[in-house]
Amino acid sequence: MRKNFGAKPWTYPQPVFIVATYDEQGIPDAMNAAWGGIDLDDQINLCLSAGHKTVKNLLITKAFTVSMATVEQMVACDYVGIVSGNREPDKFAKAGFHATKSEFVNAPLIDELPMAVECEVLSYAPETCHLIGRIVNVSADEAILDEKGKIDPAKLRPIVFDPVHNDYLVVGEKVGNAFKDGVALK
Image (cartoon, rainbow, N blue to C red; front, side):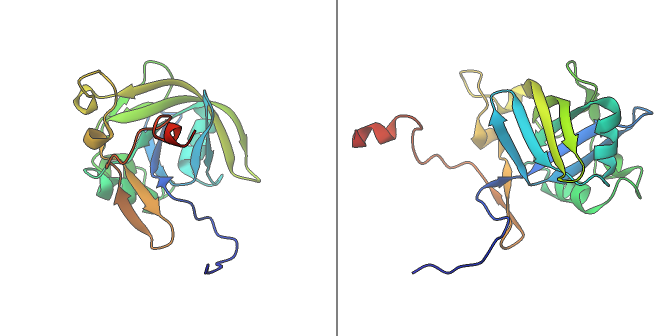
């Protein structure tokens, strides 16, 4: 038997994205966003309210980065989600983050978060909070790469958001082989 909860924004997993931008003076800012994902090979979609400092910044610079929050940086990643850049101008530094300018877009890479998607703004609809970005590059610190030079989730240790319990959970256990294990049912 199933229990009905009604219309809720609940899916599993919900990635914990850290969206970073520069303001008009080149000062980095970041925010935590759990509602988003990939919809085309070269596009990322996020639900971000217009009042966020980060949103104001990306509308000016037309660029942003999306880093995967990690277990090691969970406290800092949560901090940038609960403190507003509109009220705390040193939020990025207080989180303990350091920025390196992306080679591909006018936005910061967060040195402490080893994987980022670097994006240009394609569109933003303030009435629906829907941001669409074109993915220009994905970068990863060599420390999280496997022996084949690919991103290793066990080394990245990304976290996801549990919207039912307001918890962060770690990702990493391999349970199967995509596009292969289902062949057994053909």
